[in-house]
Structure formats: C-alpha cells, structure tokens
Length: 392
Ligand code: ATP
Ligand code: MG
Image: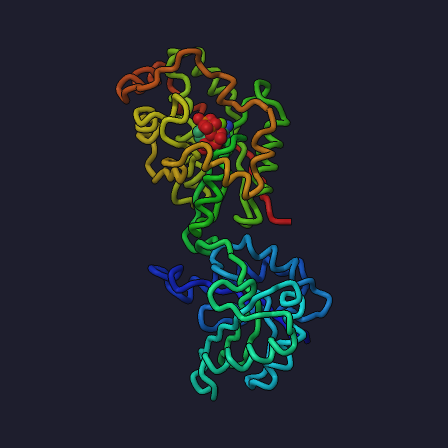
C-alpha cells in the first residue's frame, strides 16, 4: 500500500445535461481499461473526483498521470499524498512529500478546501498552520498569495485528507462513449483526424471509414491512414476501421459523368456508402473534416450537394476553423507528421482540372443520373473490410 494516489476531477460543468451516474460509470470504465497496462489500482468516486490508488509500489505515477491526460472527461489531475484527517499527520507528511516541488520554488502559498465541515480547523487556519510549518522546513521560501511559484493544496474530504502541488490540466470534454457512436470519414489528410479527435472529446465513440482506389492509390496510402487510426486511439479508445474498395466507382464516375462534377459526385457516393456502414455498425452520425471554403468541394453549395444524400446527421466540427488552427491541433495531438507523409489519396487521383466551384443540386443530380451506381455501391459495401485498432 503506497501513501500516494491520483485525484482525477471532472468539473460540475461537464455534468450539465448528462446523468451523473452514466457519466461517472463510463469514465470509470474508460479509466479501468486505461490503467490495466500499468498494474492494479483501486478506483473510487466521491465529490466529482475519481480516486485512483495504485496497489503496488513499483507503479510510476508520473507515467500514469501523463497517460491519463489524454482521457476525455477529466478536467484536472494531480498526484496527492494520503493523510489522516489531523493537522499533525498532514504536517508530518506534507514536508517530505512536497520537497521536490518546493526545493526549486522561491514563493508559495497554501490553499485549503474543506469538504468535511466537521474538521475542527477552518480553511484559513489550515493554510496558516501548514504555511508556517512549510516556511520553517524550507526557509528559502517566501509566501506570495497573488502569484506564487507553487500552490500547495490541502483537501479535507470524507475519508482522508490529501496534500498536493499544482493540478495538471486534463483533456476536458466528456468520456468517450457517453454520447453514442459516429462514423468518421478518415482520409490521410490533416483535417479528418482532428475532426475525429474533436468529436471524441464530446463523448462520441469513433468508428472510421476510408476509401481506397488501388492501383491508383498505394498500400502505403492505406497504411498511413491505419497509422492515423492508431494515433487517435489514446484519445478515442478502440476504433473499428472500415476500408472500402472505391476504384470501380471512381472509374465509373470518370467514364460516365461530366468532369467538372467529379469531386462532388464522388463525395456523394462516399456519403451513400458511409451511411450504409453506419447503419450496420450502429453509428448515429457521420463526421468529416470539411471546413468552409478550404477547397472547391467545400464551398457552401458543394457541401449542400453532399449533405443532400445523407439521411443521418453529418457533423463537421472543423467547419469554421482556419487551416492554421487545425494544424495547431494536429500537432498537439500528434497526427500532423503522419498526415503530411506524401502518399496519394483517392480524391486527388481523379481531381478535375476545372471543378465546378458552386454547383447546384439540380446540376449535380442530373450529372450523377447518367449512371446508376446502386449495384456498385452494394458491392463496395459487401467488400468492405474491417479491422479494430486499440490503444497499445
Ligand atoms: P483531409 O485533410 O481530412 O483529407 P482535405 O482538406 O484534404 O481534408 P478533402 O480531401 O476535400 O479535404 O476531403 C474532405 C473530407 O472528406 C475529409 O476531411 C474526409 O472527412 C473525407 N474524405 C476525403 N477523402 C477520403 C477518403 N479517401 N476516405 C475517407 N474519407 C475521405
Ligand atoms: Mg484530403
């Protein structure tokens, strides 16, 4: 039994509109799955906090902390020292426990939170007492209540008192799985992985669909997308990945439809297939990485044409973002490097020289009606292969 644990707090804000028990149960389940790799832990919950107690000394809590910073639903995280609910025990343990953070600081302050109102000292008294003791033990420190290098927290809770340094920022959002499942159209580009990350952060479990056109696209292109899937798993958990053979359809578009409409027709057919897969896999919506005006197929008119084929909602979480903002997130979550590897995507292979930038739905439907894609769509769906990616 160690005398240290991790406190994972989810702000009350996160709970708005969601049932508390559901939220907590899903978060606990996600945490349990996440913690298995590190060893055995005891998890309990109280007061908007999950207490994560390691059951073995050799577990490296900093490694755990680092990993848990990518779990959605947690607002803040910290390592904390477990104390008895007496000032004596708090003082005795706080001095050595905080050595590492205090030795490198010049200024500090103590903050106390007294959830247990039966504790004999009030918060200001706890701060004053422990502040005095820490100043004595570390004489190089001065107290600065406005802008301290280190804020020492004392929390008096139901079963124990906890002492810790600063809180780390958690990943925020809602626990993955608390908002149902959606199917992400995942290309090898920069945008769609970020779109998936954004929706996962809102509690959506992600499945992914990718269209390949061999021999126009290489195995490397598909491997790149699979790598992106893998890179999303620290945030999204398990991802079912559907790979759709799209060559025949793209060739049929090229043969039968006017060139200026290629891209939008292709996107509409992608949507048709995605919906069928979504229905089979219980996904309630589709997700794309589109952003208004980014390319010819992302004008409002083109998006309207694509949207028209979808019977389920299409989420476009990046719709109002600039490329620079999307790139920033891609870098932060670690997908940027893979996304910028140079392999051809099926979209770029058949890109027309002069796409119609503002097509009307009537024009598009007319152009698409030159060929009946129904059978090809069924065939592509039937030949779609599925793989599961999980966090390793
Ligand atoms: P991205 O960086 O996500 O590829 P992009 O700016 O290159 O976006 P497009 O190529 O026009 O934009 O694609 C728009 C959206 O369509 C993508 O964000 C993605 O959701 C979907 N998409 C495009 N190509 C594919 C593909 N081969 N497989 C699956 N989805 C795709
Ligand atoms: Mg792309």
